[in-house]
Image 1 (cartoon, helix red, strand yellow):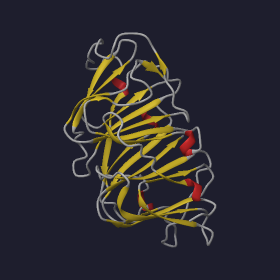
Image 2 (cartoon, rainbow, N blue to C red; image 1 turned 180 degrees about the horizontal axis):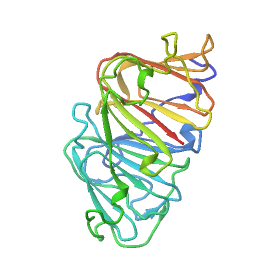
Image 3 (tube, rainbow, N blue to C red; image 1 turned 120 degrees about the horizontal axis):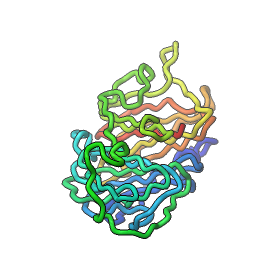
Length: 296
């Protein structure tokens, strides 16, 4: 479809093998079309430092949220590996062995995460509250020079548990009239950053969108913020294939609303003020992932 809204439909820009990322993608201003946020996304399958802007100790002039998430729909509570995260001037070292979120406020020295063990592939997501990814390298010792974290010690509030809920991945309540059959997690402003992130596994066909008195789903619009809605694969050997079919609608109600049929990993980058939804998962042959992200 080549209508007015076709430019908001974007194929996931997978870049192939980079270090211990079996496959990954960078979604910044050039890809999404805005400065609200950028993402680095990838499937980790081995030890070593996860590739980001630099391997040196560094800082950003923007806030970041790092997420480490299970790579399997069948066992979402276990990460399947261990990751070391180093934070602060002291270089405090944290061992992440379960799905976690790590908040890195702007100006906080840190290293890119270091995978110590990977028993099975898992996902790494870095959300940066900027459109342009950059790092300022800092002098100093390497990542193994600092102390291990202590209970209720420095920066422990930055390494946070993830909230999981079965069949409540989007927090839409009755606006999702059918269960997705999956497990979701949600990160909101209570993490300390002005963003909302939801991740869910999709196992069953279902509908999502504002549900009105007529019993049908309709579009809605966000006048204050941009939103990325991502339909991603859980097939570790082919992160492009959704193994299913979904229909995503963009535009106001009526004949001019554009409907996009999606069978491959896709990002719907919907700017503020553009009506969107409903989303209908018409066929689900294997579990996949649905993500929403906005900066409030």
